[in-house]
Length: 259
Ligand code: ADP
Ligand code: MG
Image 1 (tube, protein in one colour):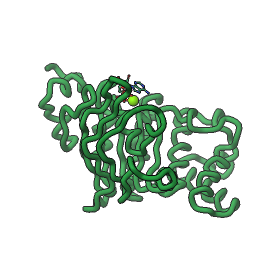
Image 2 (cartoon, helix red, strand yellow):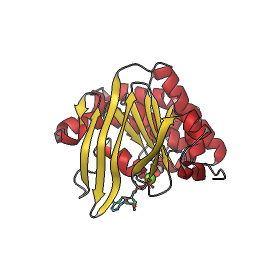
Image 3 (tube, helix red, strand yellow):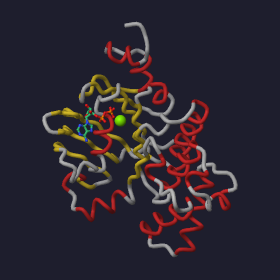
Image 4 (cartoon, helix red, strand yellow):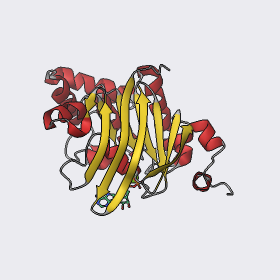
């Protein structure tokens, strides 16, 4: 696994306000190229609001975002729309809890991935279709050439999440932001998806921000962890230290340990 010295992501003093509610309260962290960071915390602690800010998905929603996010050399929060689109389709990809919300039910999964790749790279339709089969194969879809013709409802939940990760890979991102990617899956499939993310890090140097309310999910998948509580960072550090010997009672409670 190569974690270089280059900073891929640098978040400083991030705040996100929904009206009078401060959902993210002066959060700072950074990630080196190829590194993996877990953001954990109870429901409503501001994990998703933080993750969305990494791509400035709050833009145009009425939420107020402060501080700075620097991603692959771009100042995300002040970047012009065009630059942001380039970033979203290129350096960074996002995977959500529910793959169905990101997939079009009426079109073949392979076509959807090919389209994303074509938009990103300008490849021909034919090359993009080939690329779609490649990435489906890469994420472990059996008989990928045939299954590329399936529509989302023909896939199981785990396969849909794999397909979504394949779609993310089609753009050759350097960073994957995954918001509760395994929450909707049963335990066995969860483990398979986490293995896949780990493999992508190891083999392709993909950086990972993994958002999860399930501390166990983070434990085996990331190097460092950020524990969020009511919008703030309650505790942080190497995942083994924080989860192995949590200092904050809140973290101990998250782990289900006796306080
Ligand atoms: P988490 O992902 O940790 O469960 P969120 O980041 O989704 O938490 O939410 C943090 C807080 O912000 C919660 O109190 C939630 O209710 C609130 N919130 C999230 N999104 C919105 C929104 N679009 N409008 C108003 N409040 C929101
Ligand atoms: Mg969330």
